[in-house]
Image (cartoon, rainbow, N blue to C red; front, side, top):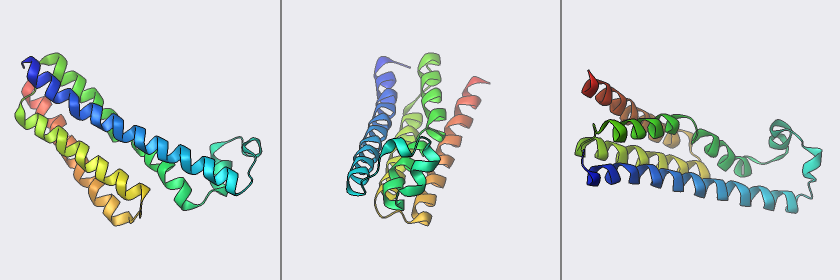
Length: 143
């Protein structure tokens, strides 16, 4: 893999990190607003479960999305690093990486806006299938 392919593969990972940052900002802003509007004292809710119990679904959606961005994407980040280190990537792998990131961004948008579960699920399922395809493709390149 040449340097251009390396940077082409790293860029989707950076974009997914930026999606995660935007979801975190959304979560942070919604929580601060909810605390102020509802006159909540954060000290009264020392655990995430207690805090979540008093927040609306709309306020909680970005927090749930943020947690979700640390599940399957962790495999993506590790796989991206492995592909770069082993120089085993190609244009197909880069296209799959962009598909994964685009589908995860779509899922995050749905989750943080109108939150229709089946729309979120289809984006999640599609991104998961792309990711598992990437894993299998990487494995096959090594054996």
